[in-house]
Length: 252
View 1 (tube, rainbow, N blue to C red):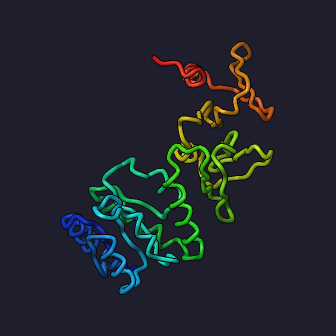
View 2: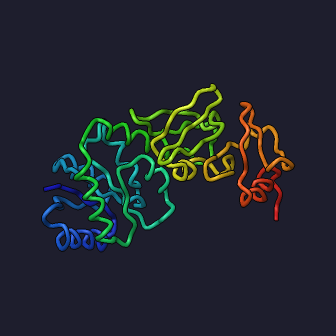
View 3: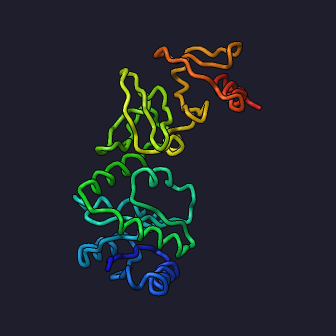
């Protein structure tokens, strides 16, 4: 039986969650405590030592991310709860175990539990939490570092050191100013969502480029760009017009 704690400032949301567990997952999931704030949640976690914590993000006094300030090591899996589809979701998808949108869908909750059952607990949990906290603070600061998941853990890389990204099936290859490259265990679509759109542009289904490294644009030879590292990439026809606008910062 998987033990869990629900931390949500809305009483109705807590009760709805508990009812869903009792109705659909009573044989797999046990709600051992519920809390209406981060402070109460920290107390419950220390007392009950749950396997999972379902954590609301937007709460008064302290939001859900503040929970991690109270733990030197995180021995439980966190599933974020949010009513805001775009609220920190990119960072969460990239680094956290999972998230659920409100109102709660019991089928999605069941899928989360299934993924938890398949996943072996290991030391990477704390590493992933550290990566999450790093990524949610990026915003549009291109000088910040981003935590990129690799096969062996996470690689911290400055955003303004990334020249371009290339899709490799379910992975993404990152090319940097140091002349090296490394493989990220996420699709190019997810990597694109993590990087600031003010600087990165998807020129092709296989390429995402840092506009600061575009050296030359050639529209007479198949719409190609030359990057500062000497690499030439082709722009997809359907993306060409939008790329030119982004390159020249033209306004409609």
